[in-house]
Length: 341
Image 1 (cartoon, rainbow, N blue to C red):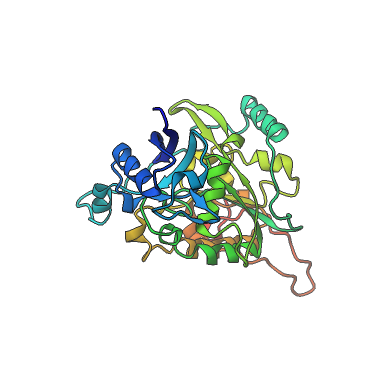
Image 2: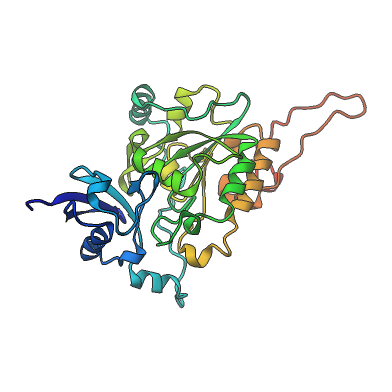
Protein backbone atom coordinates (compact mmCIF):
# COMPACT_ATOMS: atom_id res chain seq x y z
CA UNK A 1 0.00 0.00 0.00
CA UNK A 2 1.57 3.23 -1.20
CA UNK A 3 2.23 5.74 1.56
CA UNK A 4 1.38 3.24 4.27
CA UNK A 5 3.68 1.79 6.94
CA UNK A 6 3.33 -1.97 7.55
CA UNK A 7 3.31 -2.97 11.24
CA UNK A 8 3.12 -6.41 12.85
CA UNK A 9 0.72 -6.93 15.77
CA UNK A 10 1.64 -9.91 17.96
CA UNK A 11 -1.38 -11.14 19.92
CA UNK A 12 -2.56 -14.44 21.35
CA UNK A 13 0.28 -16.40 19.76
CA UNK A 14 -0.34 -15.04 16.25
CA UNK A 15 0.92 -12.14 14.13
CA UNK A 16 -1.28 -9.72 12.18
CA UNK A 17 -0.15 -7.19 9.59
CA UNK A 18 -1.73 -3.73 9.67
CA UNK A 19 -1.05 -0.59 7.67
CA UNK A 20 -1.02 3.01 8.89
CA UNK A 21 0.18 6.33 7.55
CA UNK A 22 2.41 8.79 9.35
CA UNK A 23 -0.52 11.17 9.76
CA UNK A 24 -2.64 8.51 11.46
CA UNK A 25 -2.97 8.52 15.25
CA UNK A 26 -2.63 5.71 17.77
CA UNK A 27 -6.44 5.67 17.86
CA UNK A 28 -6.43 5.03 14.09
CA UNK A 29 -3.94 2.22 14.60
CA UNK A 30 -6.20 0.62 17.20
CA UNK A 31 -9.11 0.74 14.76
CA UNK A 32 -6.99 -1.10 12.19
CA UNK A 33 -6.15 -3.69 14.84
CA UNK A 34 -9.87 -4.04 15.57
CA UNK A 35 -10.52 -4.95 11.92
CA UNK A 36 -7.83 -7.63 12.04
CA UNK A 37 -8.40 -9.15 15.47
CA UNK A 38 -11.93 -8.09 16.57
CA UNK A 39 -10.44 -6.80 19.85
CA UNK A 40 -12.10 -3.49 20.68
CA UNK A 41 -9.77 -0.45 20.99
CA UNK A 42 -10.57 0.08 24.67
CA UNK A 43 -9.49 -3.53 25.32
CA UNK A 44 -6.18 -3.16 23.53
CA UNK A 45 -2.95 -2.60 25.46
CA UNK A 46 0.04 -1.98 23.20
CA UNK A 47 2.93 -2.89 25.45
CA UNK A 48 6.00 -1.66 23.59
CA UNK A 49 4.51 1.35 21.85
CA UNK A 50 6.18 4.13 23.81
CA UNK A 51 6.60 7.86 23.58
CA UNK A 52 9.40 9.36 25.68
CA UNK A 53 9.15 6.50 28.14
CA UNK A 54 5.39 6.88 28.66
CA UNK A 55 2.45 5.04 27.20
CA UNK A 56 1.37 6.58 23.89
CA UNK A 57 -1.66 8.89 23.93
CA UNK A 58 -4.57 8.01 21.68
CA UNK A 59 -4.10 11.14 19.57
CA UNK A 60 -0.34 10.76 19.21
CA UNK A 61 0.68 10.72 15.54
CA UNK A 62 2.42 7.67 14.13
CA UNK A 63 5.12 9.94 12.67
CA UNK A 64 6.05 11.02 16.20
CA UNK A 65 6.71 7.40 17.21
CA UNK A 66 9.22 6.95 14.35
CA UNK A 67 8.23 3.33 13.77
CA UNK A 68 10.18 1.38 11.17
CA UNK A 69 8.36 -0.81 8.63
CA UNK A 70 7.37 -4.23 10.05
CA UNK A 71 7.96 -3.06 13.62
CA UNK A 72 6.41 -5.67 15.93
CA UNK A 73 3.96 -4.43 18.54
CA UNK A 74 3.02 -6.72 21.41
CA UNK A 75 -0.66 -6.44 22.26
CA UNK A 76 -2.65 -7.64 25.25
CA UNK A 77 -6.43 -7.73 25.06
CA UNK A 78 -9.45 -10.02 25.02
CA UNK A 79 -12.46 -10.53 22.80
CA UNK A 80 -15.81 -9.58 24.31
CA UNK A 81 -17.08 -13.15 24.23
CA UNK A 82 -13.96 -14.35 26.02
CA UNK A 83 -14.43 -11.79 28.79
CA UNK A 84 -18.06 -12.83 29.19
CA UNK A 85 -17.07 -16.49 29.33
CA UNK A 86 -14.34 -15.77 31.91
CA UNK A 87 -16.88 -14.20 34.23
CA UNK A 88 -19.40 -17.02 33.84
CA UNK A 89 -18.80 -20.15 35.87
CA UNK A 90 -19.19 -23.22 33.60
CA UNK A 91 -21.57 -25.90 34.81
CA UNK A 92 -20.68 -29.59 35.10
CA UNK A 93 -17.26 -29.15 33.52
CA UNK A 94 -14.20 -30.81 35.00
CA UNK A 95 -10.90 -28.97 35.25
CA UNK A 96 -8.97 -29.08 31.98
CA UNK A 97 -5.21 -28.80 32.11
CA UNK A 98 -3.33 -27.67 29.01
CA UNK A 99 -0.61 -30.25 29.47
CA UNK A 100 -0.07 -33.97 29.39
CA UNK A 101 0.90 -36.09 32.34
CA UNK A 102 4.47 -37.30 32.01
CA UNK A 103 5.62 -40.10 34.25
CA UNK A 104 9.35 -40.52 34.79
CA UNK A 105 9.21 -44.23 34.07
CA UNK A 106 7.14 -43.70 30.91
CA UNK A 107 9.52 -41.37 29.11
CA UNK A 108 13.06 -41.73 30.43
CA UNK A 109 14.93 -39.31 28.19
CA UNK A 110 16.95 -37.16 30.55
CA UNK A 111 20.09 -39.31 30.20
CA UNK A 112 19.90 -40.05 26.47
CA UNK A 113 23.10 -39.03 24.74
CA UNK A 114 21.40 -37.30 21.83
CA UNK A 115 19.70 -34.82 24.16
CA UNK A 116 22.68 -34.41 26.46
CA UNK A 117 24.64 -33.39 23.35
CA UNK A 118 22.01 -30.77 22.57
CA UNK A 119 22.29 -29.45 26.12
CA UNK A 120 26.09 -29.30 25.79
CA UNK A 121 25.70 -27.28 22.61
CA UNK A 122 23.42 -24.80 24.37
CA UNK A 123 25.93 -24.51 27.20
CA UNK A 124 28.58 -23.63 24.64
CA UNK A 125 26.59 -21.35 22.33
CA UNK A 126 23.83 -19.73 24.38
CA UNK A 127 24.83 -16.37 25.84
CA UNK A 128 23.55 -15.48 29.29
CA UNK A 129 23.51 -11.79 30.15
CA UNK A 130 23.93 -11.38 33.89
CA UNK A 131 21.60 -8.66 35.19
CA UNK A 132 22.59 -8.94 38.85
CA UNK A 133 25.56 -10.81 40.27
CA UNK A 134 25.01 -14.32 41.59
CA UNK A 135 25.43 -14.61 45.35
CA UNK A 136 27.61 -17.31 46.94
CA UNK A 137 25.75 -20.01 48.85
CA UNK A 138 22.34 -19.26 47.37
CA UNK A 139 20.09 -21.89 45.84
CA UNK A 140 18.43 -21.42 42.44
CA UNK A 141 14.77 -20.75 41.56
CA UNK A 142 13.85 -20.84 37.84
CA UNK A 143 10.46 -19.34 36.95
CA UNK A 144 8.24 -19.43 33.89
CA UNK A 145 6.18 -16.30 33.05
CA UNK A 146 2.92 -16.96 31.18
CA UNK A 147 0.22 -18.43 33.44
CA UNK A 148 2.87 -18.82 36.16
CA UNK A 149 3.48 -15.19 37.10
CA UNK A 150 0.63 -13.53 35.21
CA UNK A 151 -2.34 -14.11 32.93
CA UNK A 152 -1.06 -13.02 29.52
CA UNK A 153 -4.33 -13.36 27.61
CA UNK A 154 -6.84 -11.40 29.66
CA UNK A 155 -7.34 -7.72 28.92
CA UNK A 156 -6.57 -5.09 31.56
CA UNK A 157 -5.67 -1.45 32.04
CA UNK A 158 -2.42 -2.27 33.84
CA UNK A 159 -0.01 -5.12 34.48
CA UNK A 160 -1.06 -5.15 38.13
CA UNK A 161 -4.50 -6.41 37.13
CA UNK A 162 -2.98 -9.41 35.32
CA UNK A 163 -0.24 -10.14 37.85
CA UNK A 164 -0.62 -13.22 39.99
CA UNK A 165 -1.56 -12.24 43.56
CA UNK A 166 1.33 -11.90 46.01
CA UNK A 167 3.94 -11.99 43.22
CA UNK A 168 6.21 -9.35 44.74
CA UNK A 169 5.84 -10.78 48.23
CA UNK A 170 6.71 -14.21 46.87
CA UNK A 171 9.81 -13.00 45.01
CA UNK A 172 10.95 -10.96 48.00
CA UNK A 173 10.74 -14.01 50.27
CA UNK A 174 12.38 -16.34 47.73
CA UNK A 175 15.24 -13.89 47.16
CA UNK A 176 16.40 -14.39 50.75
CA UNK A 177 17.47 -17.96 49.92
CA UNK A 178 17.54 -18.19 46.13
CA UNK A 179 19.03 -16.49 43.12
CA UNK A 180 16.08 -16.04 40.73
CA UNK A 181 16.07 -16.72 36.98
CA UNK A 182 13.24 -16.07 34.52
CA UNK A 183 12.99 -18.61 31.68
CA UNK A 184 10.20 -18.21 29.13
CA UNK A 185 9.48 -20.01 25.86
CA UNK A 186 9.25 -16.64 24.10
CA UNK A 187 11.80 -14.20 22.70
CA UNK A 188 14.04 -12.10 24.92
CA UNK A 189 12.32 -8.94 23.71
CA UNK A 190 8.96 -10.05 25.09
CA UNK A 191 10.49 -11.28 28.35
CA UNK A 192 11.97 -7.83 28.96
CA UNK A 193 8.65 -6.13 28.14
CA UNK A 194 6.68 -8.44 30.44
CA UNK A 195 9.07 -7.94 33.34
CA UNK A 196 8.72 -4.17 32.94
CA UNK A 197 4.94 -4.51 32.78
CA UNK A 198 4.89 -6.44 36.06
CA UNK A 199 7.40 -4.17 37.79
CA UNK A 200 9.76 -7.09 38.34
CA UNK A 201 12.78 -5.70 36.50
CA UNK A 202 13.64 -2.97 39.02
CA UNK A 203 11.91 -3.95 42.24
CA UNK A 204 13.75 -2.66 45.35
CA UNK A 205 13.22 -5.82 47.46
CA UNK A 206 14.68 -8.45 45.12
CA UNK A 207 16.77 -8.82 41.99
CA UNK A 208 16.56 -11.13 38.97
CA UNK A 209 19.89 -12.78 38.15
CA UNK A 210 19.24 -13.24 34.41
CA UNK A 211 16.64 -14.04 31.76
CA UNK A 212 16.57 -17.03 29.39
CA UNK A 213 14.42 -17.32 26.26
CA UNK A 214 13.34 -19.98 23.77
CA UNK A 215 16.81 -20.13 22.20
CA UNK A 216 18.08 -21.96 25.30
CA UNK A 217 15.46 -24.69 24.91
CA UNK A 218 15.94 -28.00 23.07
CA UNK A 219 13.63 -30.34 21.16
CA UNK A 220 13.10 -33.92 22.31
CA UNK A 221 11.14 -36.72 20.71
CA UNK A 222 8.73 -38.58 22.97
CA UNK A 223 7.13 -41.94 22.06
CA UNK A 224 3.60 -40.78 22.83
CA UNK A 225 3.55 -37.04 22.09
CA UNK A 226 6.13 -36.64 19.35
CA UNK A 227 8.52 -33.68 19.12
CA UNK A 228 8.27 -31.15 21.97
CA UNK A 229 10.39 -28.20 23.12
CA UNK A 230 11.64 -28.31 26.71
CA UNK A 231 13.71 -26.28 29.19
CA UNK A 232 16.75 -28.34 30.25
CA UNK A 233 18.21 -27.07 33.52
CA UNK A 234 21.47 -28.65 32.42
CA UNK A 235 22.09 -25.50 30.37
CA UNK A 236 22.26 -23.47 33.60
CA UNK A 237 24.19 -26.17 35.47
CA UNK A 238 26.74 -26.32 32.66
CA UNK A 239 27.32 -22.57 32.80
CA UNK A 240 27.26 -22.05 36.56
CA UNK A 241 28.92 -24.82 38.56
CA UNK A 242 27.50 -23.59 41.88
CA UNK A 243 24.05 -24.74 40.75
CA UNK A 244 23.24 -28.47 40.54
CA UNK A 245 20.38 -30.94 40.88
CA UNK A 246 20.77 -30.58 44.65
CA UNK A 247 19.96 -26.88 44.95
CA UNK A 248 17.77 -26.02 41.92
CA UNK A 249 14.00 -25.96 41.50
CA UNK A 250 11.94 -24.86 38.48
CA UNK A 251 8.31 -23.67 38.55
CA UNK A 252 6.30 -24.01 35.34
CA UNK A 253 2.61 -24.42 34.57
CA UNK A 254 3.47 -27.02 31.88
CA UNK A 255 5.04 -30.23 33.16
CA UNK A 256 6.62 -31.18 29.83
CA UNK A 257 8.95 -28.17 30.06
CA UNK A 258 11.03 -29.95 32.71
CA UNK A 259 11.00 -33.44 31.21
CA UNK A 260 14.81 -33.30 31.04
CA UNK A 261 14.97 -32.69 34.79
CA UNK A 262 11.76 -34.18 36.26
CA UNK A 263 13.15 -34.36 39.80
CA UNK A 264 13.77 -30.62 39.88
CA UNK A 265 10.50 -29.39 38.41
CA UNK A 266 7.28 -28.35 40.11
CA UNK A 267 4.12 -27.87 38.09
CA UNK A 268 2.42 -24.76 39.38
CA UNK A 269 -1.33 -24.33 39.02
CA UNK A 270 -1.93 -22.09 35.97
CA UNK A 271 -3.16 -18.57 36.69
CA UNK A 272 -5.92 -17.78 34.19
CA UNK A 273 -9.01 -15.52 34.11
CA UNK A 274 -7.29 -12.88 36.21
CA UNK A 275 -10.40 -10.77 36.70
CA UNK A 276 -12.10 -13.66 38.46
CA UNK A 277 -9.19 -15.40 40.19
CA UNK A 278 -7.00 -12.55 41.39
CA UNK A 279 -9.14 -12.22 44.50
CA UNK A 280 -8.81 -15.85 45.56
CA UNK A 281 -5.54 -17.21 44.14
CA UNK A 282 -3.01 -17.77 46.96
CA UNK A 283 -0.73 -20.27 45.20
CA UNK A 284 2.35 -18.08 45.55
CA UNK A 285 1.83 -17.62 49.29
CA UNK A 286 1.85 -21.39 49.81
CA UNK A 287 4.75 -21.95 47.43
CA UNK A 288 6.76 -19.26 49.20
CA UNK A 289 6.56 -21.28 52.41
CA UNK A 290 7.47 -24.44 50.51
CA UNK A 291 10.60 -22.77 49.13
CA UNK A 292 11.55 -21.63 52.60
CA UNK A 293 11.13 -25.15 53.99
CA UNK A 294 13.24 -26.60 51.17
CA UNK A 295 16.03 -24.09 51.70
CA UNK A 296 16.15 -24.73 55.44
CA UNK A 297 15.61 -28.48 55.63
CA UNK A 298 16.56 -30.19 52.35
CA UNK A 299 20.17 -30.77 51.33
CA UNK A 300 19.14 -32.29 47.98
CA UNK A 301 16.11 -30.94 46.11
CA UNK A 302 16.15 -33.85 43.63
CA UNK A 303 15.16 -36.28 46.39
CA UNK A 304 11.99 -34.38 47.24
CA UNK A 305 8.77 -35.39 45.45
CA UNK A 306 7.73 -31.92 44.25
CA UNK A 307 4.57 -33.30 42.67
CA UNK A 308 3.15 -33.55 46.20
CA UNK A 309 4.58 -30.26 47.44
CA UNK A 310 1.38 -29.27 49.26
CA UNK A 311 1.80 -32.27 51.60
CA UNK A 312 5.50 -31.70 52.20
CA UNK A 313 6.53 -31.77 55.85
CA UNK A 314 10.24 -31.12 56.32
CA UNK A 315 12.08 -33.61 58.51
CA UNK A 316 14.10 -31.80 61.16
CA UNK A 317 17.74 -32.72 61.38
CA UNK A 318 18.74 -34.82 64.39
CA UNK A 319 21.28 -33.37 66.79
CA UNK A 320 23.83 -35.10 69.01
CA UNK A 321 22.52 -36.27 72.43
CA UNK A 322 24.00 -38.11 75.41
CA UNK A 323 27.52 -37.66 74.07
CA UNK A 324 26.76 -39.32 70.73
CA UNK A 325 27.78 -37.70 67.46
CA UNK A 326 25.08 -36.24 65.25
CA UNK A 327 24.30 -38.64 62.41
CA UNK A 328 23.93 -37.47 58.83
CA UNK A 329 20.41 -37.63 57.56
CA UNK A 330 20.82 -39.98 54.62
CA UNK A 331 17.13 -40.60 54.08
CA UNK A 332 15.49 -38.98 51.13
CA UNK A 333 13.11 -36.13 51.82
CA UNK A 334 9.56 -37.22 51.14
CA UNK A 335 6.15 -35.69 51.70
CA UNK A 336 5.30 -36.27 55.33
CA UNK A 337 8.99 -36.72 56.11
CA UNK A 338 8.95 -40.42 55.16
CA UNK A 339 11.97 -41.99 53.53
CA UNK A 340 11.58 -43.43 50.08
CA UNK A 341 11.70 -47.19 49.97
